[in-house]
Image (cartoon, rainbow, N blue to C red; front, side):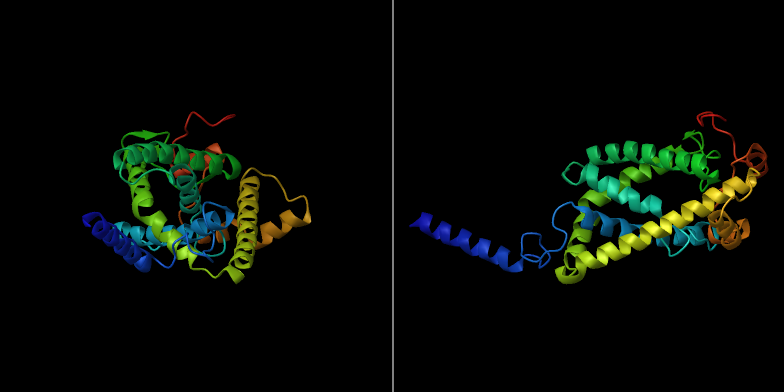
Length: 261
């Protein structure tokens, strides 16, 4: 008899849990972007890119009293570093348990430092651009990363695994299936175009500073539509350091790890 009572109690408890389960649970039919797939990764990138840009903008206003555009693309307010970082953290940490925050913190700190260093190095090599310089801070590596901000990446990883990622999965899952995939493809196409135009404009800026004249219609268009004054006004945290003269004028130390320099 006691066993029967216990079984009934367990059944009632299970039923109560099922009734109160979040309507966005990935176990229910119609959940959009179930699991880790292209659709979910894109929406994570899209949302975090926007939120990251907003966070950086507010941070600059609070800490420096400056209103800066912290976007990484010409059109819209999207920080590619934040968005791609969210994708990277998802791919690497989505199976880790939030019950091991020390491990997540350490892994996030190391991964974030490597990722941030790579972002800085790539944008300088491709575009001669510098969007941040930590050479004035202690424990920095070539001005690209430093200990404090690397630890912020670790903290972000802990928050991502324990709070942000599950919450965003629930938000994304509420997108109706009937137009979720088409909307994703349209927004992804526009973002790819945005990134392509931005990359071309920054690359052409680098060529102009190096004395390379426009040689085709595309380059003439880029010179006319995106001259230096437009790019510097759009990217208020951009410093051009693609030549030794520009680097010296900007006061950015020359790291020793850039091939050919």
